[in-house]
Image: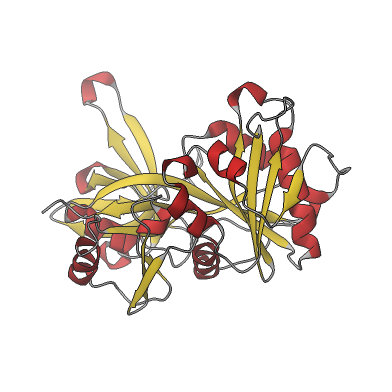
Length: 331
């Protein structure tokens, strides 16, 4: 949400606006090369000693010199919801996603759910907020240290009531960032509105072939089985290899939790791509999820996976918010 070309530019924000979502234009480059500007949108997380910190929807924080400001304004907390896209709060989706990827070991620390799963996946080995209370970082570090794991938090950005202030605080404390991802939502029925695909098998069983064909699960099948079988109502899909005994060429998992169907582990073998297998897997999972009582869909995709992002956009998904992980400094 930048500034129109003919808009009157003025700085309409002050340090009193810390905590609000803003759009800021600042001057970059040197005078000799001509004036150049950049627009930054995010939550104003600090304004001290002549420097503004704006934590963007990606979870990255931009630091801007007050002297370089050209324009600034407070903007709405998030974009308008597209017609047909399910309504949901960030808190609802965080809780549903946590139930759909349950760690073997959990504990509650105030409003925070601490999860541990032998290091298998960041999701199963990170703390996630289930309420508004701030975490106790030292206690979280102690809990993970006792399990031989790094202390890691999963934090949301880019929507109303997300974690930008905490992101900025941990950034200053040296907690490293990784695992940048996008939370998508969409209507479930359109996914299933296509002819049944006989290539896809859907059922409750997590087969050894499914586990072996999933690149992540194959690293720790025992822990993966415990996580993948968890959740309120779990379905698995696979497309068998054309050759008898060959590994499945496409996989998928869906967890139905009330109105939500959460899609995870959508995988297509590299040599089998561009055959519509990913869409077919999601369609057949959507079909059983509808019969299981769901009406809305959610899934996550990493920032760098542009191909998957394009697939999901084509299937009617839209960005709801973003999240990433912050890991405590070693020692």
